[in-house]
Structure formats: structure tokens, C-alpha cells
Image (cartoon, rainbow, N blue to C red; front, side, top):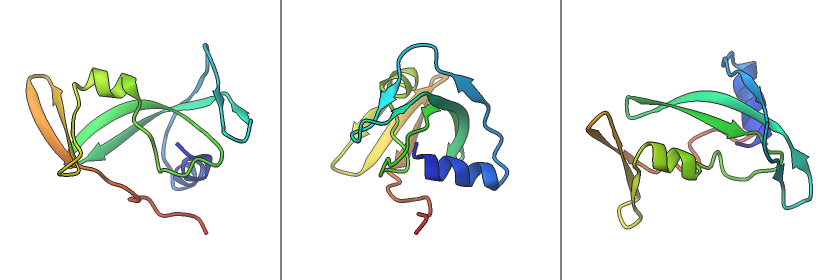
Length: 106
């Protein structure tokens, strides 16, 4: 998750515990190293998810759901329709991709 969005969410009252990074670090394309991460709950189409996000400076997308999230939620991606499906507790939930859903700081 971009640092700009994370800081904006905190300013708006989001409670997101910041967690120590025990293994590894994220190195940006600009060579900057970040060891910030936070546990964030988000909702899409009425379904809540929790995800630990690395907080990265200068990241362009709003967020990237990594392989851990994809595996934990049995995600199936349909690129043709721009949708993804999750399976939790025996139930399927289908969602549209949400590119650019968060406001950008200008």
C-alpha cells in the first residue's frame, strides 16, 4: 500500500496496528527500503477481509493483494470480466476489480 494512502487513512481515523517486520524488507524500484507494515481491514461488496500490508513510498497502485491473500481466500481471477472470486467458510463471493477506487493526493 502506498504510504500516501496509508497516512491519509490514519488521518481520517483508521485504526490500523503497525506491526514490526520480522523477516525481509521491501525495496522499491528507487532503492528505498521500507520496513513498515500494518494490519488493515477492508470491505468490498459487503465482505470484510483483513490483510497485512507493507507500506511503501512511491507505490502507484492503491494496493496490491499478494500471494498470501490469494491463497488464504482461494481467489480465482477472471481477467476477461475484470472480476475475482473468493471462497471462505464454504461460500463464494465475487467482486469487480477496483482500480483507482481511492482518491489520489495531487
